[in-house]
Length: 143
Image (cartoon, rainbow, N blue to C red; front, side, top):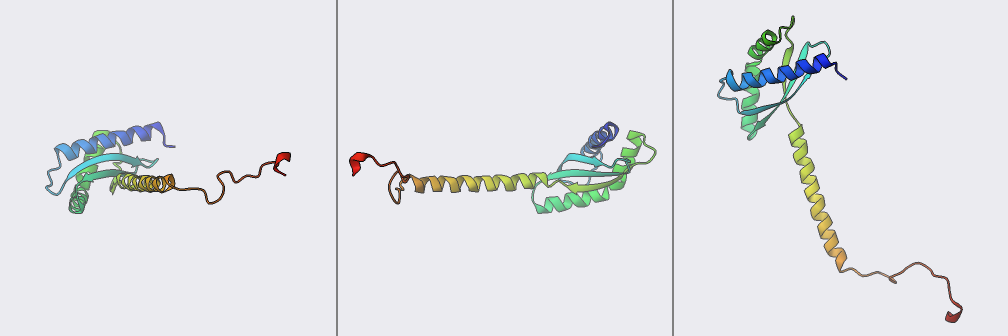
């Protein structure tokens, strides 16, 4: 568990980077990007910034290139605004959570359709043997 100071710094880095991407970075390759999370090491030397991009694979590649070229400017601005002795090194990482969520949704939809088709087939089914397959005690009248 990270210390409260590290969590606060990570939240501040997230805000600073989002503002920089919105106002200061004017790279045309930069797509519609959202900063989702920042992971900061305990010694505040390395920051991993997770982001998502709305669009296709070309938009993802262009945004990754734009973020890579703006890393130095972003790092210097983060260091200035936070007033840290050592500005953390910054690495941008595409966030895998939306893709995993989409995959889980697809699996749930497939399971629902499979369940519906199984219920449809089972509605007209009859028992292979008797309707009550369990043995019952015999009555004296049966003999």
